Image 1 (cartoon, rainbow, N blue to C red):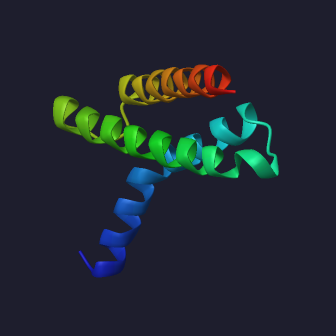
Image 2: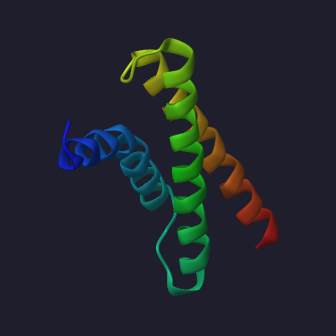
Length: 92
């Protein structure tokens, strides 16, 4: 396996979490100048939690790309985004 194969394997492993974190955050948070830091924080937190879910799914199932792992990824990112929305609404 060459280094470019390793790169593409790692990129394809983490891409679902990164795309989901960016998509769910930009879809749910209205983009305004005053909330740009909150949007960046939400994207980073969703990406970190999403990558953690993918790693845990890989360790538990032994395979990458199981549907249960992707289901857990969506559930965790949606729950985290809901909690962040509630936090931002309470803070004003």
